[in-house]
Structure formats: structure tokens, C-alpha cells
Image (cartoon, rainbow, N blue to C red; front, top):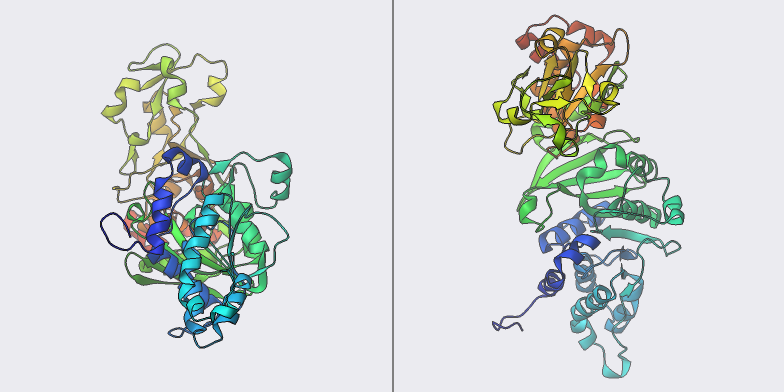
Length: 501
């Protein structure tokens, strides 16, 4: 009982332990307690993927392992269901079999100890029904160790809420995960890959993770590996993330994977209750995985998933603006001068046009004092500009504008683009879509909704822009010269499944 006299549940005990850790330790290890509602929901998704019937408790079909078990929250729902289903079985046999059905692993020995306490407490009612002469100690269900270790028994279900965060890897460890790593190593991606490799052929991998693995360059190898070995089965987007995990600002999801893929992925979202979003083709390959967050976007995602052309293959390339302003503070000025170029900030791109936001005028010009500035910093040609980061309250995720030659001339013939802006330049003499048209296409409602199927983040990376799916060259050519209303309709039609264009 706690100090106010009420009983502390298993879930509350685990939460108290995680919350007792120093903030620095929690941040360093990426530790976050799994709320009960999400633990139960992830188990519901897992048992459905395993083919267990709804509405009826069933004994576990094999080993359920959590390789980053923390305080055991994700193992409680399957353990409870198994004990309910096995109630009429010989309780002594039920107790002895638990070690082959439930397994937790955690690097923190105190977490492993607490998991054993919490899970063991759940078995006490069963143990009490065992005649004293036949009783054995409560089995050890969790061990301290590395959840990424190879050679473990393959599980019928691997279930996890792994630690999050970037980390430096020893050369030998990085080599072992080279097939799923690109650039920075994020530990949760390593756990997902290891979980897939350590799950049985007919088993299920279930994860509570950030959605960042579905897009972005850093996770493209992981997407390729999962898409080839264990495709996505179901996806549930968790709304209201600030109320779910304290201190976690990333969009979060519950997701299951199976080796035998279905044709389509069922997508839901939840915030107190589960709401159906729709179904889309199973994501394949290492490109962006198009997954709608809202039901109104399911058709757009389904149509885009079948397109083979991207913005990059259409003759365009996006790059991040080169100016990181806090590295050049001494070179920032409010007025023009010799060897100074005007800076374009994210706030200068609004309403489909490039303008001069007065709030940025205190740092409006960059002194070109570094030898490489003329080659690296200066933009002297027309381009399409896209905000790299949007605010949550903004109504759009793609905020684009055409930097025409006329506009560029009015700004002095050259500009410096700040780091929170993406710059789109042609890579072909005659790209499949012209610059002014491209800027207007990116301003359409359909493309904005498409971006929301790629990322739940307010960030818009150059990689994601390059990877935007586009219809074929004939359709792109038909968009040239349309007025705004006609273009809006034409783009919407192109991303309508089954439409004849």
C-alpha cells in the first residue's frame, strides 16, 4: 500500500520506478514507462496478428519476449491472458511452463529485478492453487542483459518499447548492424531490426516507437530490411503524444510486422479510443512509407503509393539552406554593404511568395568574409524555396514559394538561404515539371495532405521532398499553364485512385 493507504498496482509500481530515475539518466538511456492503455492496445494488435480470436482468452502459442522490458509493462497483458485461459489447467504445470512463454531482458539489473517482482506477483493466485508439496519457486521471467544479443531462441512474438536516441557505436557493433544503419545510429531502429531477426517464421514483431522510421534518409536501410524480411501488418498512430509520454515530443505509433505479408496495411489512430483511418498497400522497399494519419488522406496515400516517379527523378533536387546563423553571428548585419548578400529566412516564405519579414531585419544581410562563401553560401539562380520547419499551429506542412529571376533581381541578384529553408534546383536542362508550376503544385491542398502521409513531424526534410511521389510525365506536362483553380483540381484528380486522367 502507498502512503495514502490505497493499493499500488503493478503498472503504478513500474511507473514509480521509472519516474524515480534521475532525469539525466532517463534521457541518456531513452527510458520511458509504457502507459497501461498502450500496453494493452499493443497486445491486442499482437494477438490479432497471431490469429488469436477476439473476445476469448487463449493460452500463449509460444514465447513472448520483450528485449527492453523496463518494468515489464508490455509483458503484463499477455501473462494475464495466459493465466486466465489456463485457469482450469493443472496450476503446477502452468507455473512451470511460464519460463518458456514469457521472457524479459533489460540492461538495467534493477529493471529486470522489478519485472520479476511485478510479473511474479501476477502469478501468486495461480501459485496459491498449487498444493504445498508440489510448489516450486516462482520462475525467473526477466534477466539482466543486452536485448540486442544474437543467438536467442526465436520468439512467437517480440514486443517492445525500446529506448530512443542516437548513440555512438563501437566499430564491431556498427558492422553487425550495417545492413540497417545509415548515418546516425538510433537505438530503437537497432532493436526493431534485431527483433525481426529474432522472431519465429510465423511470428509477430510488435513495437511502440516513434514514427520517424517510416520516412527520412537515416532509416532507409531499416525500411528496406523490414520490407523484405518482415513487412508491416498494422499501424496505430497515437494522438496527443504530450499526454502519453512525459518529455517525449515525437509522434508515436504502435506497429506490428509479420513475415507473411498481407496485401494491405490496416491503419488506425487512437486517443482514448481507436478510430479507423483506412487501408493502404503494404509499404515495400527503402523509400518513404506512405501512411495516412487521417481517413480523408487514405485515398491520396493509396494512389501515391503506386506512382513510380518522384520529384528527384522528375529532374529536381532539394538541399538544405547552407547558412547556420549562430555559427556566423559576427557576420550578420541589418543593412546592406560591400560584399554583403541578403539572407532569406523561413519567415520570408509565406502565402506562396518570397517577401521580407520585418522580424528578421536585424539579421538581414551576411558579410561574405569566408573564402568559400561565393561557392557555398550564395544562390544566384531561380529556385523553389520550401520551409524546412513549420509551426504546429500552421495550417500547412508544405510552405513553398517561387524565387523567380525577377524576384531574385529585386533582391540584388543573389541571396543567402538560411538553414531552415530547403532549396529546390533543377538537375536536368529540361525537367519534367517547370519551376513556376512546381512551386504552385507544392502549394496545392493535395500535396500538403500527401506530406502529412509521409511525416507526422512539423519538419520537412530535403530527402522527403526529393522522394515526393509524382504522376507520369504526360500528366505533369498537362499541368503547365493551368490557372490556380484548374491546377488544384488536376492535382487532386491525379491522386485519386482509379481516376482516368
